[in-house]
Length: 479
Image (cartoon, rainbow, N blue to C red):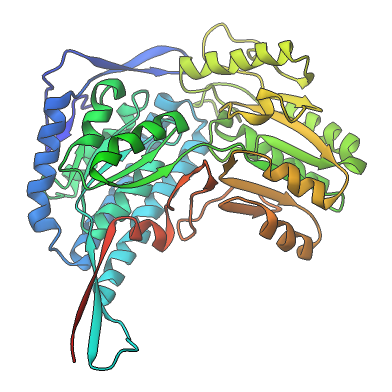
């Protein structure tokens, strides 16, 4: 197990004395101490990436695709090891960790294909109306990309960034989230196994307060892709502003799930439960605002409560577990603070609102539902990032849309209805970047990911994810 930064295809002992402590959130036991990178290691990683870019940026998409497919193959062969490590480092139940890993593998394979396609369109003629002038466009890699990823989906959000960046011909400096640096460092082992050229992928775990600004302000960084909180996203934008760096941000959400009276209620319950209790609610896309039609509210809430009571809380490595702990002590404390706030606001508690019963250790929280939550409640408006669902009812489709859009965020939404024309109509009216109909949240790699309003800038996944790492160069000439 390597616990140092991975720079220029070497495991480097940092100059700092700082360490990152990785725990198993189900037991609160320390599972690793990671040596934290400092500014000197950031300089070293960027220099390695810049040197590697001289050759990597000139390779063909087909050549880069070979490495991307080999990364996916190694992850496939190492699947059980990575699943177990992800569960231990993040707290996920094993099926969720496997779901994540399959997503990451699919991302590398998808962008391998996109890299090959890029060869075919790297230079494309552009028809012009002007006579006597011809034009063509080139797609070129942005350069050195700083990728900053969160702790809620390790290996997944990094794959969503690394795969398109490498496919485009960029070289990468990856800063993992502090709590889950252990699992992300496995990418260095994988890079060694596939013999990825030195400097193409560099991994610099470290304390954000020490190296975050230093990384994003560095003059040799051409592209920043950040996934995380709005507070830190704002800091990233400020850091990037003086040099007008290319920035992509995937930020917070307070997503609605709208359940209409013509819905299949069992299907709706499944979508609600998965939308807020998967990954213990630690999802920027979590549909944490349930908006249910008044005529079915009583029956639906009874079914929902019965389903929540069947959730089995426990450590991720227990086959019976359906919801694990939250990942960090800080996030546990945050959720508990919202429970205190709910009491101050005298919210109508349906279930939960406490630490999960039966555990003397571990960051376990009971799945929680509050009903009749007013729109000015902080629990209704703020991203909690935990297993907490707030409920309102509505009388008309127009009211449902208004309530759904009444948020500073616009990342995702779910609609449950038996009327396809309504599904299309409501989807068109909602301000959200990704919408599901009558199903749990699944994000195929071919689709786009990103949001409206304060949920971020740009898109990941699909061809849009590749475009984020490409510059466009136009060449005009006399015919």
